Image (cartoon, rainbow, N blue to C red):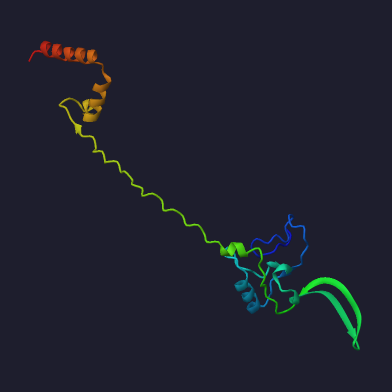
Length: 171
């Protein structure tokens, strides 16, 4: 995984960024790290010592790209090298973040008031016992369901059978 700039909206370190900028590790010193955290406008994450910030976010006087050697007041070498950051540098330039910082977040609409309809509790089916055997027990809801399933002609024939059995049994 490559190094990427920690500053929001900065594309340094991504494949889409064609410009090459040096990336600097966050300082190990706790006081300077805290200054960097306060300076970088990022809300979703806190800068850690493993993160990096590119040279675009520092003033040019804090970034040196040349190495110069002096001997007895004479310049011996003046060669390009990897960019170095001065010890007291703090990121202060955030050109890509200006638009982001000036935007106010959109406020969400309140959700519509929801009402929850609670179904009424059904009463427990009542059990009625007849004078017959224990197998003849039926609840009122069972009797109602069985009578609902019968057609009107079946109900008539069952009532005829009931009345004929009453006539035949001697009392």
